[in-house]
Length: 208
Ligand SMILES: C[S@@+](CC[C@H](N)C(=O)[O-])C[C@H]1O[C@@H](n2cnc3c(N)ncnc32)[C@H](O)[C@@H]1O
Image 1 (cartoon, rainbow, N blue to C red):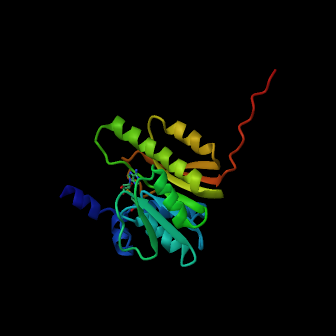
Image 2: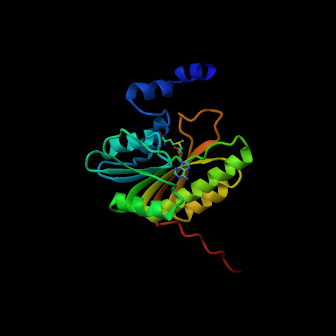
Image 3: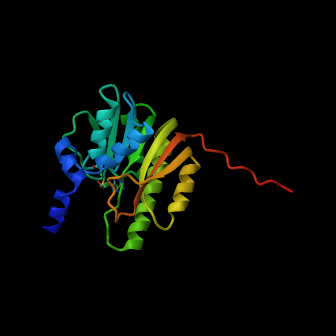
């Protein structure tokens, strides 16, 4: 009951209902793609951990009829016309191969809002979340076109810096963003990476 009250008074929850988005998290993605001018008309987008589908809704609206959105989740996603959905685990090669086939060409943008089922044990949840973020990075590196972008949810904590360093080995630039719709008590952040395949070369240490 308290939870329902909190939800009802939440501005983004009310906005999501009014604008037909399946989850308030749509506004996190909207803020990011507007700020960085990502997910544009005609583009091909892969959405990982996509159920119930609010990020896919944002992507579908932005790419338009000439674009394509492929969604992957352990759960099925129904009732979003134009969305290509795959039910499966993003860590499986077969699922990645099917996603590539559904995309038809290398993706312009890979999105990942993947989150593990929470156990309530902080250390376990953090370890699973970071493992899934690395798995999403692996999928992005196998499906993006050169110069493509990757937006991924991560939880701040142990191993976050190592994950960010791994992203920077693949992309020219990676920013850490906390969208307005993220709840104050949340540890979630979004890594927004651009320029796939063109990492900034690390400078060799000078010999003296
Ligand atoms: C926070 S929800 C995503 C919300 C979605 N972006 C939206 O806006 O509607 C996280 C999703 O990650 C999915 N997930 C967790 N582990 C996964 C895995 N190994 N492979 C694919 N999907 C996974 C869950 O099933 C869940 O639907």
